[in-house]
Image (cartoon, rainbow, N blue to C red; front, side):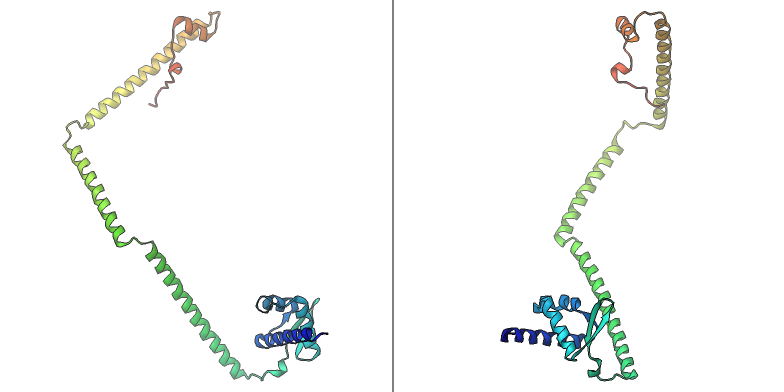
Length: 217
């Protein structure tokens, strides 16, 4: 192996050893490659070879997990942690977790407040809106004034009278239409031609000819 390749292999081994010791958790070769490839530009083949070499040298541990190998730091190099130390770390983790949650909640409140302020009208925009509303209200007041001053208001009695007349005309329209239909049907029983021809010869125009329909009662 050339000197350049040896240096590259040594560099990869050093990077992987440091990474596994700092993380202190098991990884597959694929995991290590995925985590370090972007930062250090290591190829997958180089990662696999460096991990196997470190395991052979006893600098890291290797274990089969299913069909793949898992690599992790040699635990003998780490100091033994007492139960008191573990409890202290757990308490520190809980405190930091609570602090993170508090900061996240504060950030959410600030984001909501920022969104509300961003969507709110500026002072010039509010002044313009007020002027437009005043103008609109003035128009409504003028219309209301004209309506109150008008002398052609329809009284409830007049409205009722119009409604009754409409009903009467509607009823008469329906009655006459029925009579005309019955009469034409009786004539057509002995008429040699079609109904359309009969209407054309006699000069009868129907509501349908003028797209007129009886209104609802």
